[in-house]
Length: 283
Image (cartoon, rainbow, N blue to C red):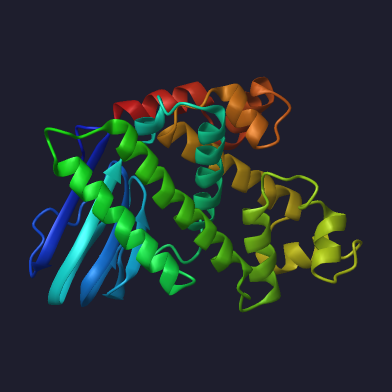
């Protein structure tokens, strides 16, 4: 059975434990950020064994599967939340920043290296996250004084740090040119100007006349089709995990309007966006 939560946010902290009963190897139905504070062992993530140690951070999304194989007593904090936890997050700027976080986190969600920890770029970042997780745990566990505004703002700060470390990971050099091109497309998928043939050719020092041919030779499908496939995948993510309107999804992914999104999605998936979203709710 999938693991679910019945509140918009659930925060758990485990101190020097050798067994985590909640981590059954079944799909989750929420977003989750794990911070390993102490300990050592292996996380089995979507069929991959990933060693973990202190000061590491893991980000999970709905339908991920993971569990712990603990080798040394482990201290870990787990923040589990639903996207609609932020539905009443006041302020246009906060909503805008949340959308930016979701865009950046998509580079992790759909990346080739999903089963890895998010590498933090400095000790300061690690220290800041540790402090924020302590605030979250303390606030959540204080049944008398718990304040949802404090929880939202603190979690928002955590997500902001996560997103800027996604930026840091992106800027690190890939192992091959085609991998770098794919990562670049994923990162800038919301900016049509940066993923045009001319822009990609300039960025990667390939002739504009040759870039499409090179991409198809390496990836087995045209550059245009790859970009559209990826946009459909992102549309699926948003339909599953957010309550964004069809017009908002269309606008963010560069479709002319919701009708254009509807026709393209139907062509690729054999189902309309509205029917797809409804099916996901029934799962």
